[in-house]
Image (cartoon, rainbow, N blue to C red; front, side, top):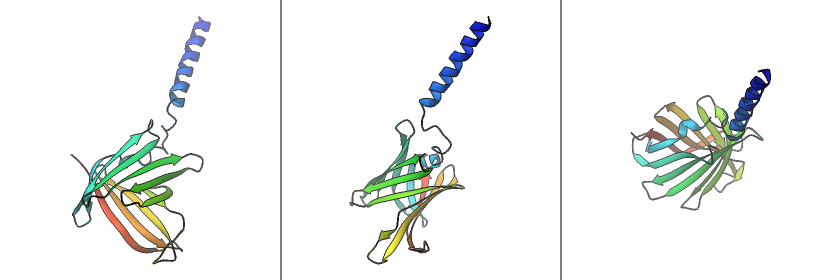
Length: 167
């Protein structure tokens, strides 16, 4: 009887370990940006519609992809992932205008704060891009994109969008 019970316990623990190993991205850290997942309409803070965005999880929940369709005709995608080797979130943004951004950061309270490396500019000799996504409630996310000087002081706000979940 003890041998049967031991066999059942061994089988159950093996199944539990396999279930965990089949979900490499099922951690709290990997879920920190899930508040952004959904279908959204995006507005300015003055309530002017800027576009629509679909944010979804891919690759067994290891990647969050945004698909942006702006009212102006600009389209773009971002690929976002948590890297356990440095415990940072990474974002790569690419759009139809040829722009790209590479950002890295982490969760801070109800926000995801992502920042570029120091970049050489034309108007500002050296600058950082910083994008902060803040969960306002289950149906609203704020996105603020700022340019910071070399001392990480805000210089200007490039974009302030309000994501409203589609009904």
